[in-house]
Length: 269
Image (tube, rainbow, N blue to C red; front, top):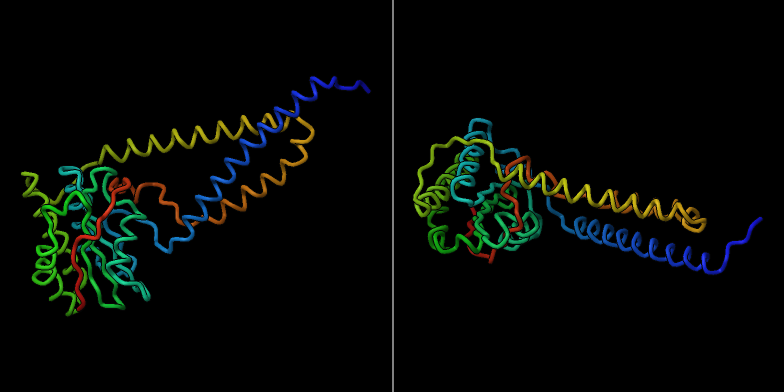
C-alpha cells in the first residue's frame, strides 16, 4: 500500500481541522438558538388574532383580522390580539412585555406595534405599546380605552366584543394620526412575501454551506469516522427547539423584531 507523503498528510489534517471547526461552529449556533427558543414559554404567533383561549367567535375574528391587516398595510403599525387561558403566576405587564419582545411585534427600528393581551383565568387585560406608538397612544389614553370600551364587556363575559372594541379603538387612533381612513377590508400584504423570500435565501445558504462541509469531511478517513456522531448531535438539537416563529404568523407580516418599552395600561375585571 502506497504511503501518503507527510506534506500531503499535513494538508489533509489542516483541511480536516478547518472543516471540523466550521461544522462545530454551525452545530453550537444551532444548539444555542434551539435552547434559547425552548427556554421561552410562549406560544407561536398565528397572525393578527391569536385566540388560544378560544373566546373569540368567527363572527368577530374575521373582521378583526381584516382590520388589523389593513392597519398594517396603510400605516406600518402592527396590532396583535392574544387570548390565553392562563399566564400562571406571571405579572400581566411583565408577561406582555416579554411576549411582545419574543414575537417581535412591529418592524425592527420603527417599533410601531400594539399588543392586546387577555388572560382569562386571571381576569386581566393589557394593551402594550411599542416605542413607535407611545406618542399617539400614551398610557392615560390606553387606560381610558380599556375603562370605556373594553372592561365593561369583559366583566359580562363578552370577551370577543370587548377585544374587538379594543382593536377598533386603537386602530382608529393610529389611522387618525396617519391621516388615513379604514374600511375593514384587506388585500395581500406584499411585505410578507418579501420576508418569506429573504428567509428562504437564508435557509438555502445554510443548506449549501452544510453540504460543502459535509463533502470536505467525507474526503478524509477521520471525517467519515466522526460524521455519524455530528449528524446525531444536529438531529438532537433540532428536536429540542420548539418555539421557532417561522412563517411570520400565518402570513400576517407584522412580526419584524419590534420592541416595547413597557408603555400601555392594564386592568382587572
